[in-house]
Image (cartoon, rainbow, N blue to C red; front, top):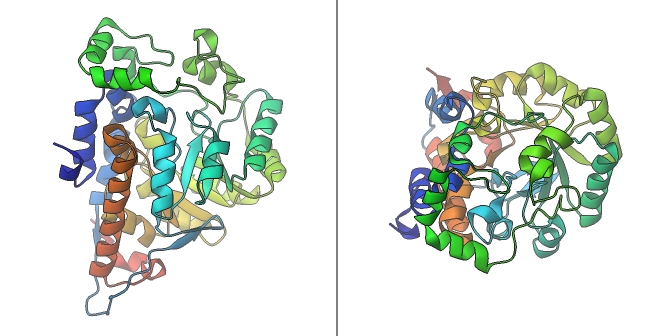
Length: 381
């Protein structure tokens, strides 16, 4: 099975599973506790049916959107995710290039493996910088200043990760940065030697957004230590309001799940919120973003750009979210599996398939632009 045989999320996942050592595949594929929320994120879309209109004349479809002041050619974008060069040596470079090809936004994580400056200089499409709130307020200011100087358009603060989720697959394999593999985990690396050859023959793995602050050699300042020791679980709305004012631009909170919190995000001057449960990787048993979407759009949709991620695997999922009032939809594992399987050609193929699926779904729904999608097009079972 090669890239040309991949036609959907499940095909890319299967190809990635064949090519990655088990611990790395399971890091992407895994989620918290019993992984109930991970499964429900996608299942939620199946509880909602589309109602197409016919004979409306849909020769040309415009799927462009404007979200947080950024004009995107597609209503989906590549969410920021950590450690991408661990999955494939091209990492964020592949994702940024593929996003640019399709005219959409891409995110760079503070746990990213390519510098936000390099990506900003190379690619014209809008760039989001995802970061965490640190105990060291000076570090927070320095990271925002760096992003501003690099020309980043949108700051995205993750608010659902004041402590790491309980990802039991990683505990079983010993996956961590730096690696502390169990014997079983080491055996799985031995079974996939090509990954190891690629890893050692390309530039040394690093976290350029954090290399001045986190020692990749391990100890207390490994990635586990970063979450435990450097992030501030006491952060509150007043802290964030200060950051929003200081940034003075497009600023969104990722991980909002209630109408009350959405209202507070509006009140402190955020320009966007992302309904997300971190792809099921944080609080297992939490509700799905799609199931919360209508309630939150009804509450604040006129005042702030509401976006959602988690569980999106199909163009029809995107169309359902847009019909409920989401301005755009974030993709995570959807592009990570093809990245891991095939680098930039993999990400391009995945985004191309998603673009074709959204266009086809819009035509079959009888609409020619995103703003024609409304809740009238849906029925919940």
